[in-house]
Figure 1 (tube, one colour):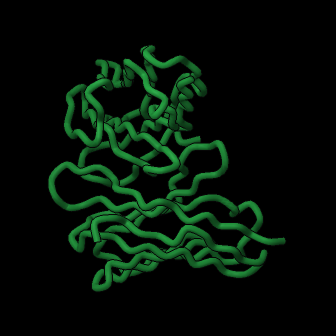
Figure 2: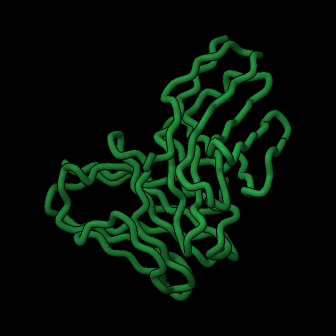
Length: 113
Length: 112
């Protein structure tokens, strides 16, 4: 158990819908990262938050947004869903900004029908 | 190249050593990582190495780093069937606040 929790574990929805994925980092970790894992693209970095502020952005679509709350949990919002958004979405956390140990959650499997 | 590269498949016999190789992109990368992903599961941090080290050993795992060639390897001694999984190499570049960049993963199959 990495100490990073993600809910829900599975999500099935239809095209055009909006979903919210939730992540709680390990106790004491201030950074939260979101990644998308698909068969063709591998693991792609989406966005990072550190202590409530956005710190880095990757290949995140405009239809996707995220935030980190004062209690440090984070939510990833995916809207106007398309079939191609079906993937595993992982959250990771680390203590600071400068590397070291990164721990990943179990992931949320999103299926868009 | 632009990407972190790994061979896609590796098959070994139970009890043998496995060596999974990776080439990374940035000679100034500060941290290099190995993660394990079992079917339907998340990414488990196996080990990581800071770029000023050449080698790191942790029980059955040995990581070797060749900075000149930008080559990282993970050796698993006495490979067991429970080691069957996908192994991901990742680098963290030394340029500001950067995320981990992952390879596509090597699927290790252990034959009993």
